[in-house]
Length: 121
Ligand SMILES: [Ca+2]
Image (tube, rainbow, N blue to C red; front, side, top):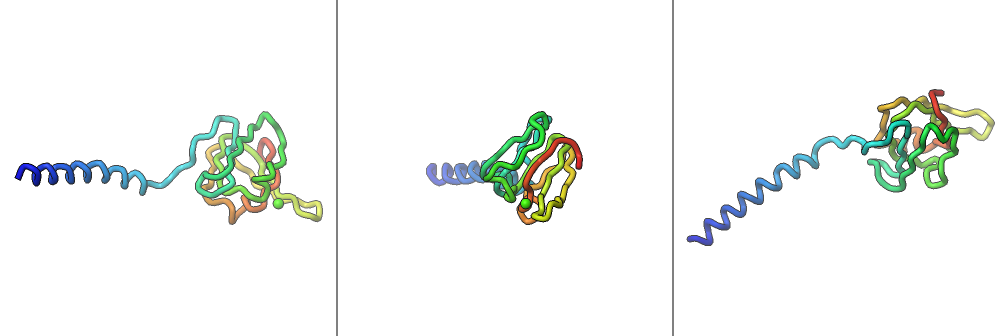
């Protein structure tokens, strides 16, 4: 009888521990923080894979090879211009503002981005 009441208590304690944890996992995931004046890039969607922190102070930069045409997600904390160069000398640009972020960017401009420049486009 003593053993049975301990088991019941253990089950209730375990349930109390697991419910908040599964509730937190179901919450919508925001971006990880990125320093002011920077844009943080990830090679995979959902803010995972290879990372690169570009700072506006570093000026215009071509995307690193692992992120060229392959940005899965980003979090912007400074104004910038994302650039996709076309083979014919033209380019497509996207203005990014502080507070902008995308967790799934690979099927959009993240699959075409070649460079990033400070300020808007
Ligand atoms: Ca491109």
